Image (cartoon, rainbow, N blue to C red; front, side, top):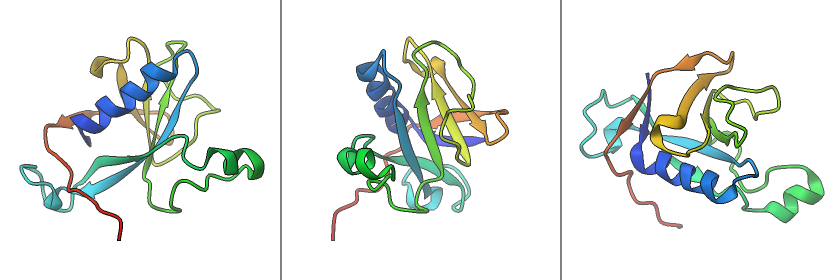
Amino acid sequence: MVYATRGLVESCLRFARESDPDPVTISLSVTPAGELPGADLPPETPVFTHFYYPDSAGSVNFVFGVDMGTPVGQTQARFVSHPNGELRVRQRDDFAERIFVAVPPWDEESVAVFDRRGEEQPLELLDVEPPEEFPE
């Protein structure tokens, strides 16, 4: 089972809707369930809660071909949109431990999660809020 906050999935879908007809790729990270008030899961269970803006450091990426906007090793999944309607992992998708794929009409029913081999994983959306983070 893959767990994610409803707010995270809704935010990713909004990016996909606004980018359509262009695809979007967003890095996703987890928070242990024990740090999420109201999460009725074992404390060590990873829950996808945060994303990194897809266009952060875009000009640097364009010049050097490196994703400078996402901290190395701090994301466990990618969200990718497929405006053409393919609800599956494609070879050109950014592979990660988990790949969230969304297709039009960009709603919760049009999202699926896959592992690295392209096998669909069950997804449960949680109505919990992630902890607030502030820059130090």
